[in-house]
Length: 285
Image (cartoon, rainbow, N blue to C red; front, top):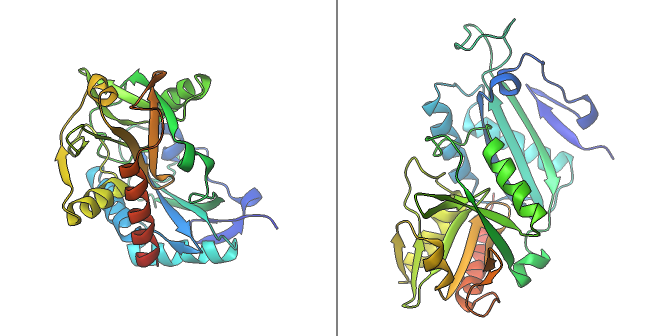
């Protein structure tokens, strides 16, 4: 059965899902996106994703064409129509299509809202057990990375470099410190058992999974420091891992070909993954 997508008020077969060539998301990357995981047919941590969506569109003066409550209804309807058990729902809102191409915001144009689903076995992914390698690349992005913009060319280049190197992710480096992954947040566990992840600000995207993992760790009296760290510190750490909506918590076992500790996923990473999966299943909607 052909996958069903949502485009501006209608559920349509993916082959019929189209937007104008004048859409500002296509012409200017003038838009925001979100990705929510799905487990057992339910949305994971979706309230956090929708709150971030509202913040991001507010930062670029873009009004949502639907309420977040209605957006969640559409997400659930897509999951149902596509019989999605495990995977994700992608959502994108742009400033819409004008009659021409002009940089300034157009007036009287309705925003575009599209969504679609994809299948992914996040829980059973082989890399969840084996861990991944990461490579390092310069952070080439603009200075408002806290906005979840569809302008992802720097991340595309970083992820392509990782793919060509046989790595699972790229960690982006600025002023000698790790900002974040191409599509993930970066963590290390120091030798004195402190979890370290970059503090929120304009330098990184405020990751929803990152936020949940930090809160879950602190609830269990684990020490967490939100600060920048270097690759040298990461290579000297007990463990390293990434978080995102599409991997949850995933061990990093090598950085630029060098082992982190013994080159295997560590016990803290495994435990945090278990804790997050329990949280995800308990709070799914």
